[in-house]
Image (cartoon, rainbow, N blue to C red; front, side, top):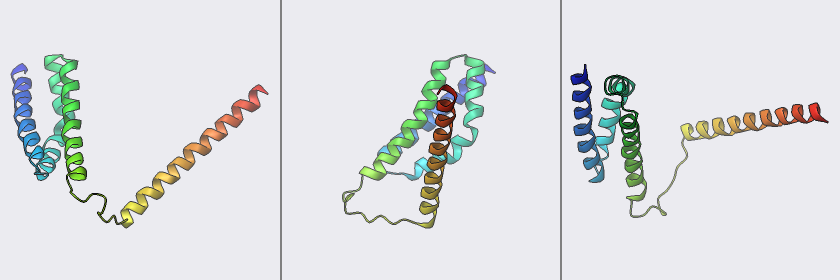
Length: 125
């Protein structure tokens, strides 16, 4: 099984290198390939690698490498445009649903905190 873990690790390194090079060259579709191919088996891959190689440092490297690819692609999409300030932004229905959910979540969090604070102050005073 160690051979399987090493083989999966080498496959990931090759796949990651190709994806990262293509994302840096501006081909964002390779990020979609990365997400579609790698992320569904991500936890299985981490489990096999950790169980047979017993390296938490290697697991952290794999976790952070995933973040690097995704954040690099996002930064290139956002900052790669020449006219980022003059770009028109349009709020869609899905955006408004997400914003309303976020506002509702923050309201519930804040109201729960106020209720907790009221209970704590009533107990002591």
